[in-house]
Image (tube, rainbow, N blue to C red; front, side, top):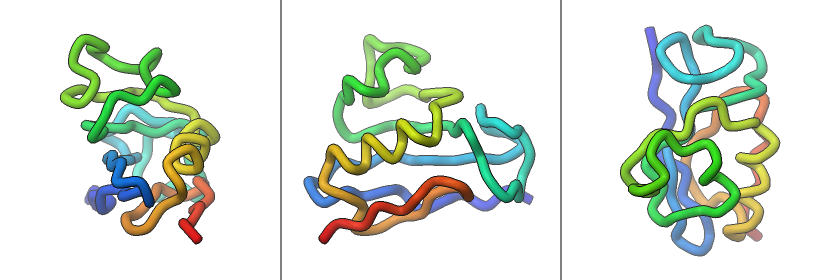
Amino acid sequence: MFKMNKKVVCKDGFTMSVQAGETQYCQPRTSGADRYTEVEIGFPSASEDLLLEFAEDSRIPTDTIYPYVPASLVSLVIAKHGGMVEGELPAGIPILRAD
């Protein structure tokens, strides 16, 4: 059974859903993996240049899915927005907490 991760909230207020599992666009495409190398991002609170190339529909960047985003890029986005203050990430993505 798939467990939805809580939305990631960054220090500057930027938010996004970061999910991985058998029904998400991720690698490996299975639930409960020890480490995901690519994950699905959904519905960020603002357009994020680092993610746009992955957008299913870049015309609506806050109302679309971003499939197969490299885990390392998720960490970069979180760092760019000041670190994570709440939320959950799939296994294998370092949690960069805000100071």
